[in-house]
Amino acid sequence: MFENNNRRLLLLFSSHIISGISSGVSMIAIPWYFTNTLNSNSMFSFLFGVVTFLGLFWGLYSGTIIDRYCRKNILEKLNFYTGSVIFIISSCIILFSFNNSLPILIGLVFSATCFYYIIYYPTLYAFSQEISEKKNYVKINSYIEIVGQSTTVAAGGLAAILLSGIDFGFIKIEPLAIEKILIIDSITYLIASYIISKIKFNSYIKRKNQESIYNRLKVGVNFLKERPLILIYGVCSHIIFAFILTELFTLLPLLIKNFFQKGAYVFAMTDVCYAIGALISGFFVHIWLRRFNKILLTIVLILLTSISILIMISNKFLFSLFFISIFLGVSNSGVRILRNSFLFDNVPNKKIGRVISIFVSINTVIRMILIFIFSIYFFSENENVIYGYILCSVLLLIFSIPIIYIYKKLKSNCII
Image (tube, rainbow, N blue to C red; front, top):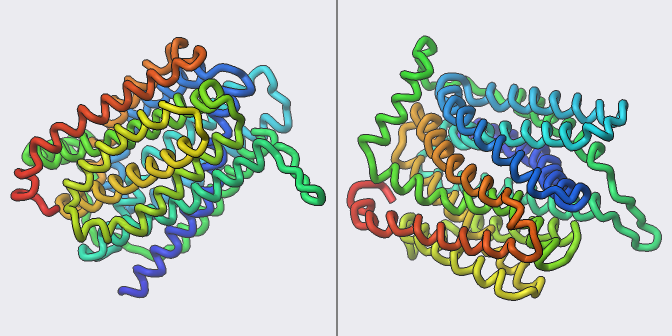
C-alpha cells in the first residue's frame, strides 16, 4: 500500500510539473502582454474581475464535484479539456491571424486557465489527502508546495527568456510570440492528462451520487456553521493568497513598468524570486513548527507580509523588490501549507472538497472587490500603483486581528 501511494504521488507530481511550467509561463506572458504591448492594464484588470466573479459560482459548484466523483478522474479530464480548448484557440490565432480579435482570444485563454485553477488545486489537495496517511499531512502539503514552486522557478526563468529573448554570441533566442507560448502550454496539459490516466486508483470513499447539488453544498456549510473557529481561521488565513493573486495580475506589472521602470525580464524574475521563497517554506515549515504552532506561525507571517510590502514600495532598489518577493513566497506558501494541514487534520476527507470550495468562494469575493478597485485608471497613472499596495497592507493587518482574537480558543478546541 505504501509503495502504491508513493507511485501515485510520483505520477501526480510529474503531471503537476509538466503542466505547471507552461501554464506558469502563460500566466506571466498574458498580463504582461496587456500591460506592455497593449498598454491596457485597466482592461485586463476588468477582465480579471469579471472572470473572478464568474469563478465565484464555479468555485462553489466545483466543491460538490470534488466530493462526488473520483478525484483522479477529475484531474485527468480537467487537464484534457483545458488543454484542448487552449490548443484550439491558439491554433486559430496562428492559422487565421486574428489580429483584431487577438486580445479577446488571449483573454479567453486566461479565463480558461483561471477556471482550471479554481477546481484543479482543491482537487489536487483532496486527492493528496485521500491517498496519504494522517501523520504525513504536513509533509505531503510541503511536497506539493516544493513541486509546485519548483515549476514556478522554471516557468519564471523560461518566461524571461521567451518574452525578452537572449543573445549570448553563439546562443541567440528571439522573443516568442504569445500565441506560440500558448500552444506549447496546451500540449503540456494533454501530456499531464495522459500521466494522470496511468495512476491506478479506486476511491474507498462511498459517495451518494443521487444527492442534489444544493444538499451536497449544504453539508459543507453546516459543517462550518457548527465549527466557527475553523471558519474564521480558514477565511482570515486565506487573505495572503487573495493579496498575492490580485497583486500578481493587477499591481505588479504596473509597479515594474511605472514605479521601477523596468521590462518583462524583471517581471519574470520577481516570479522566480517568489517561487524561491515558496520553496524555502516547503523545505523548512516543518522545522518552524517545532517552535511555533500552525496558528501562531500563520499570524506572524500575515503581519510580516503587511510590513514587507510597505518596505518594498518605500524605495526603488531592485534588490528590495526581489528580496521582498522571496519573502512573499515564503509567507504565502507557508500559510498555505499550514492552512491545508490544519484543514486536513480537522475536516473529514469526504467533506473537504465542499469545505475548501466555500473558503475559495469567500476568498474569490475579496479578490473580486480588490480587482475591480485596482481596475480604476487612477492606479495606472504615474506611480499611483503604490496606493494599491498600501491598501493591501492595511487589509492584511485587519484580517490578522480575528485570528489573534480566537487564538486561545483554537488552541483548546482544534488540532493545531
